[in-house]
Image (cartoon, rainbow, N blue to C red; front, side, top):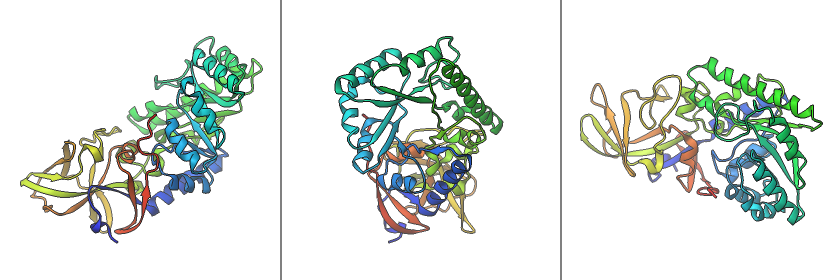
Length: 375
């Protein structure tokens, strides 16, 4: 089967690019002696998680317990949730412990104490890390606080919790305006964590793990000392945002959306069948302007690059309105195009399956097993 026989819109995953992306990241982590624990929320695929672990990853990260349950059922035996779980989920966590080694984060004393109480009642212990806010200002304790180390020591003393270390996410790297700024964010992250680690260890508490994770910063996190674990997710596919942030080249983008021209109302307007239910409404971020809702590719001498004459200017639920500039574009109803989405992680969650391809050949159906697992 070739891609021309697939129903559209659909998601394509280039096998060679995925394998290359996985091998590069694993090799880079191995060179530094860092554990690689990919975030599986990008692909939500049991098959791809197995490939990551077979290649050397120590386990996976999941965003929500629903994802973790899917991967645990499939035999993934080391799962970390870098997410502030509430103790109301204690029953589900305890059930997971029968199938997988589970760890998660805490960043609030009341929540940590609630988990301690719940796990003591169940006679269980769980690994936890304390989330540290390194500048994104979403979750995490304030490392500049005078009592930050003391709070961590108190968490480490709670029964039912096995304190493993510190964890951060430099999500503000997505807002950087240059390579230098991304590097500075990665350096600051490592420095903040190293300083806090020293303060905690001075109180007699061991800090065995220092875990960082974000695809834009990971290339510079690899240059830092004191880190034990990397948790990038998007690196398996990359997307238009990662290209504009300097984290990838177009040739690294493994996930594309295959769409079909459904009508051509006038010379400058082209309508595709891939709306917000396929491409998402996410906008791209990066060092330079990247307007629109994805990059429509063109093939020049066998190399696919963005067609700058096409702008996906608007999405409806089932339609993409594309504006063609310059000379009349040759696309006509029935023609197929491939689109690099702005954000590949969200695209994964919008479809039941993707198609693993090699060039124009379809190799196999790739189930998105954890799609929709958001609780």
